[in-house]
Length: 603
Image (cartoon, rainbow, N blue to C red):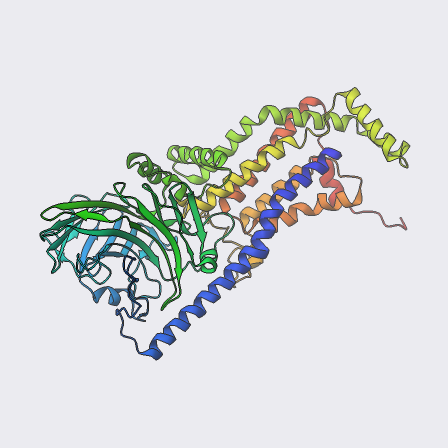
């Protein structure tokens, strides 16, 4: 029974780590952070009301010479709704197949952006995802491009600059929007916004110098956010400040870490990108490749607390009577794998694919996603794609599983001899082990063969979990019946009779249909083998399916469906191989013995 024990231990340890972490760390932390965010938001609103601050004003400290100017709205929060906040400024409309919103002409900021193809819940009438919001709101979040000047340049475009629209006032993939601004030093700034059909904006700034002397100024960009996700991040993926620049490469700073460190400034770079990422969405800046720039990741506590990824280019010189152009790109949208990869390749954005957190085992996770996504395009359903992926994985591992189950069948044949050895050398473990090894050698049995299929399945299990958790393609992806989101747990529960009793249950009691199916298939698979003679192992043998049912209930439904289907295929495969080897299938006998009334001592 050594192979059965190894089988159980391998499975238990691998999944137990995920389950225990999720139940005892991730879920309590999520609840604590939601409550902390609610309290903080309430505190800020009360503080602003008491101070009587006018909405939309910037009372923050001025920027130091040569530094990025202070973020607007750092001391101003309005309790008004989103539409009221948008109405306080003049705007140019954004309308694309994927996005809708507007450009704030004060600062020429992207601070109003909704994603047309994504809603907050699976309900078709649910509101669209609001990615960017005005700074005057508690959840202010925006991207901004500007300049840093000096005495010779005069006032240059910054957070409080009011731009004028030159011509078309609606940004679409075919109609760019041009903004202009002139100062008293003879400098005219012409900014052109263009956008593709997806999520990439191009910001082209032309500076024309009509003065009599050369001027020098720097270009800056920033992504600023005043709140953070209400749902706590987990070890499974990164959420927070992110970038890939210079020799340091990938930089990831979670909200908690940047709050502690306050600021991180890597070396200068001439390529790369930086911004802020959520689980499914991101806003990033891609600075011009013509000018070296200094990236920075920071957390500010002056006025309103805020998180910021920004860059500042080296000074750009514009001679008298001449002009200069700098161009930056802003990605603001959903982290769709195909589009992210296309941007990285077509626009030569260095390692832009790292915006999606594939993890350390990306060499497994990426192919797993590719396989599921390819099958989805064929079946039209991600649930069916997961089932087909399971069949393919089983087929790949079939030769190894065949040897494994054959070895297990041979071990069942020699089980009487094994019991004789245990009884004969019950008091001498060393001789017992030597006799066992000799028996294995004589019968040509590998006692570890039963573990290899399970061991190889573990990376597949984790990679599928990662794919379901991080990829937006799986978000709100329906299966059949009650499963309308494969990335979320099964919404039904045994304890309210699967919705017949209208009560709200604690999370730990949400034991849905698919977790129950998974538990039953796991129970049947384990009963294919003889019950271990050791009482401890026998208890594990009996209760492990129940424990796993409770643990897996909180996992994404797609993962539970995969596990249940994998168990079913394993039962069929093991039964066929055992029959071919002439080994007895213990399933029926084990089930009869389980439910048979045990005689009392008196009997």
